[in-house]
Amino acid sequence: MVALGWCLVILLFVVGMIGSVYPVLPGVLAIYGAFFLYGWLISFEPFGVWFWLIQSLIVIIVIVADYAVSALGVKKFGGSKAAIIGSTIGLIVGPFVIPAFGLIIGPFLGAVIGEIIIRTPWKKALSAGFGSVLGFFASSLVKIMLQLAMIIVFFIWVF
Image (cartoon, rainbow, N blue to C red):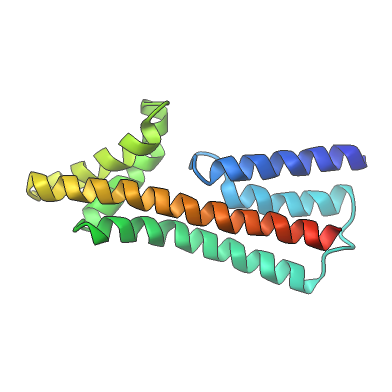
């Protein structure tokens, strides 16, 4: 049972890290779920109140930062709320419509279309689209670092 537990925990860690750049997968929640899986299949003994407080705080920061950093990228390049909404829709839909490049093209087109809908000039709409792509990359970098911190804290606590 211990070997199965470790395999499933590692699998959830991998899914979580992939989910930090591929929004269809449950990034931070997969990693958080791995801790519970470890507890149920192996032992909750290593985890105390501080472990759960630290990990829960990181989960909240990741969820808030994911939206905030992406939105900041759009705003920084002159995008409006329509660009932020369009970028978010593009980020979700893009990978399904254009599997290989949807993660980059989706937010870009979503932001541009969002701006065009509200009659923003082309140049400013393209700038917002560029900002959405930069925001996505910055957000992914933040998520990768924080989720890696969660995994490191887990291994420190367990070993």
